[in-house]
Amino acid sequence: GGSKGGRVTRGGGKVNGGKGGKKGKGPKIRPDGCTSVVLKGVSYEATEEDLQSLFQGCGQGPCSVRILTDRETGQPRGTVFLDFDPEDVEGMDAAVTKDGAELRGRWFRADYAQPRAV
Image (cartoon, rainbow, N blue to C red; front, side, top):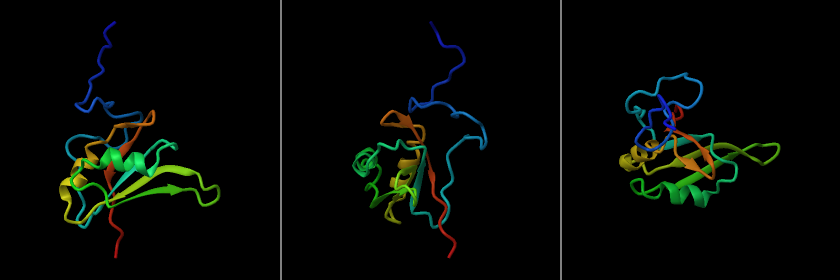
């Protein structure tokens, strides 16, 4: 039973998951002034500890992990921000390479967070 046509990326993640909006070709470009990585589609069971341990090998590791929750219900929204030291460029670059990684049974997207306009 060989699966035909399913290229596997080096992380073992799925090649472009689902609906193709942006083409995920080549390395992502880190915006100037970026100090955070945003994760989307994170499992609702994932804890800050899970995320810290998953990303601790990325440079110095994230300084803080912010799991966004719904204001009404307090439930996680599946979006997480990892804040890095502004000097820790390697950490941010390593974190976005985990795009398509799996945590608690769900795989998530990882990308550079756009810095807030000052």
